Image (cartoon, rainbow, N blue to C red; front, side, top):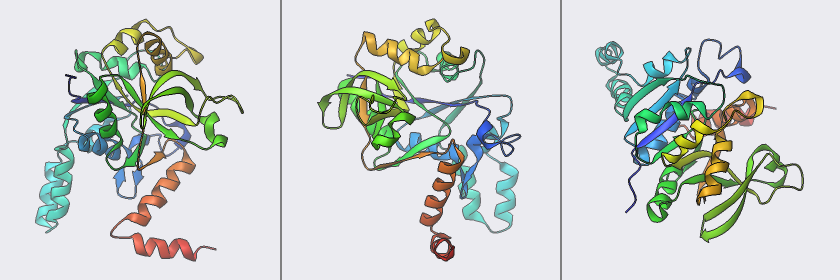
Length: 289
């Protein structure tokens, strides 16, 4: 019987240089999509999937992330006094989403470092990884679909989505063999393949279910491109010694809010769906010439 996934790591220590000067004093993960910061969407996906403990790995300029998931007693009291009880309950619920643990990133640059930093908090159990500036909106949630595959097969897995041929050069594209419907064994991952060199149209990125073996590999992985510690290098080593699956996410839409254009697309998409402003916003969009 496979061990249940209870904990998730969310790396959120990057500088967000693509959004400067907005991110000079504000973390990119706190940029709002209508009325919620990006990272709250990520946390909500994890909680809706059954995660109980969220480990957020931050940097020196990320204090506002910790403040956001704290319980603002004075704000809540002000809202109650002003008769805004629904808003007071809403900010209280944010703090109660999960048990939050915060770690300051230490070590070399690279997206493998924040994961390795969480090793002592994870302990000897399987865990999830989600990035703090991107998410997939899916039903059931993306991570829940991955956890279902983990519980059935007991094999580490990575979320995957189909991308058009002209976009394969932007992602890590998996060379796979089928296991069952929507689940594939990864033979290799080709990072940002050139035109005509992509082994499939299945992009693997965004979320991971791993075992503590990944920490051991990361600790021994030499620094790669740019002198940074890369998760992809550790995953290649892991896939060479054991099965790693790709789980194709169903009924999902990917939001890469780490760049300006896709961030704006996400804001428009969620703005159109928003129950309070959706109709008026749609009229405004249609009025633009």
